[in-house]
Every structure is written in C-alpha cells, then in structure tokens.
Image (cartoon, rainbow, N blue to C red; front, side, top):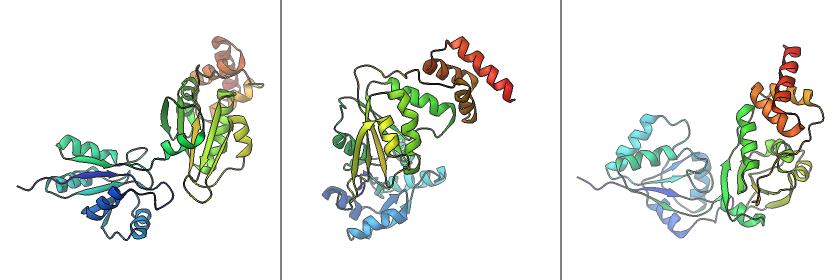
Length: 281
C-alpha cells in the first residue's frame, strides 16, 4: 500500500508576482496538481515562474463529491498544492472544505506560508494593533449588516476588513457615526504599482472615497482602550426608520439602532418604528 500524499496550503502573492517564497516555488513545481480558486488567474502566476504543473479548479461551488474524490487521490499518494487567488488560502477562501476533509481522514496537511493581505495592511497602516480581529467581508445588507457594524464598533481590538472598491464609500459612511474619531486606514493595491494607504476617521475617508476606488481594498480600524459608542446623530428619526426598513432590518433591530443613535428610549424608539411602519403599509 502506497504512502498518502500531502496537501500543501500555499500562500501566493497578493499583488507583485515575485512575492513567492523559495519553498512555495518548489512545492508548486513538485506537486501533482495545483488546486486553484480561479485557474485562469493562477495560470498567470505559474507562467511567470515557468511552472508547468497542471491546474485544477477548487472553488466555492465545487461539489462535495469532487472534494471526496480529491481526498481519495491524496490517500492514494497524490500531492496537491492548494492556492487562492491571492495571499494565504483558507482566509475568506473556499479551500477550507478540502483541508477539513483531509484532516478528518488523517492525511498529511502542511503549509508553505507567505503573503497575507491582512498582515500586510496591519504593518503598513501605522495604527495601534496589539490585538486584532479579522472580519473579512461584511454582510451586504439587512439586519446582519447592522449587527456586524455594531459589533465591530463595540470591539476595542483592531479590526481588519475586506471590501470591494465600489462598496467602499458605503462602508465608510456606515462606519462614520459608529466609530467617531477612531482612526482607520484604507489600504489599496498592496504591493502593486499604485499601492496607497490613506488614514483618517471614517467620515474623512468616506468623503475621500465618495466616488469609490480601484483595486483590492483592505480596511484597518485601529485598536482602542474602550469600545466606540455611536453618537446621537440622527436628525430625522422617521427617515432613518424608512431607510432601515428598505434595507430589510426588523422592527426590533431598527428600534435598537434608533435608540442608540437618537437619544430616544428603547420604548420610544420602538413606538416610532411602529408608527412609521403603519403609515407606509
């Protein structure tokens, strides 16, 4: 019976194609196949380094049957290099399913560590980050987004988020009343030609990026000694309620947010939500 192969979790460049360790190069060259989130994207990296290892796709929609088949190949002696589109796999990445399945089968899993957008942003931001939490992408709308924003603001640790260029302005606008003077850094196109790190409050950065941005975005929120509390800034409670209803929030969620940002009691806030809702239904 042949010895099982190894699943290598390989960190790849987040921008500059030369940011690949010598060990990672060797693993990519010697693996039986490279498992990639987007084979077209990873093909460019392999071609840049003259690597001809076959590419196979592994993404969020890969069926469970294919994951099981890959595990069987590993058990039979094949070795795979698992990569993401950029940076370290498993962080906001679908490869976790294969790693978990290989672990459960007792197969060798190891890593060739390297680039990470999270750590690169933290090192360049110049903001306090003795403790940090990786948030990833926030929910796009509804009560889950509201809850995630409130949770972020209430956590005194530094926060690291990913965001798409076209939604950056909205993210910063949503954070502004929650974070107050707590500083952020918008890190754009890290390690690339047009790398940019811009710092300021969420309100300042929301104005700077009102028209959106280009490239890959990582946002860092600095650590603080005390959680940030949203300041009472809602001038038009009825408009606020209508906006939150349109976003899909529940009456309870809207009332909680309204009370926190308007000075109304929870009971008064809920009554206002019911009143506005009845007038529109």
